[in-house]
Amino acid sequence: AMSKKLTEAGFETSDYDDVVDNCGGAERSKINQQFMVSDDIPRKTRSSAIKASRDCEVKYFAIGSMTADVATTHQSGLKQVFVSVRGTVYDISKRLPRKVGVIGPVQYGGRGPNENIARRNALLLAGKNAATSIVDQLNKKGLK
Image (tube, rainbow, N blue to C red; front, top):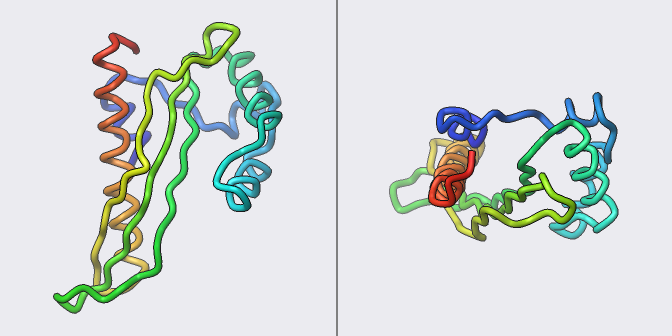
């Protein structure tokens, strides 16, 4: 949902796995594991990912997370899940990364007939709204 919104707004997105394949950097699986432990990544891992992205001629680098809560039952009888999203977009074109967009933490809720559908709906809504917020911030700064 985030990549779709960014692409529609004229941004060219790349998968981090392609950066690792072509320019090195910390493996995505390592980053995911570190996020699961501390909801953040260590400085050396972040630095490795940014350096590799810069080597691959990437101008903007985004780091973010979405955390889904346990499903509850809404008064309508549907399952409801809340997702918390946060993230930061950095301009990495110069030696020191500069924050150019920040989102959250913000929560979005999704409903569905079962927990999986409710979670998927919440994640899609969170991704779409987070990307819209980031695009608005970058557009206000005249960044593309």
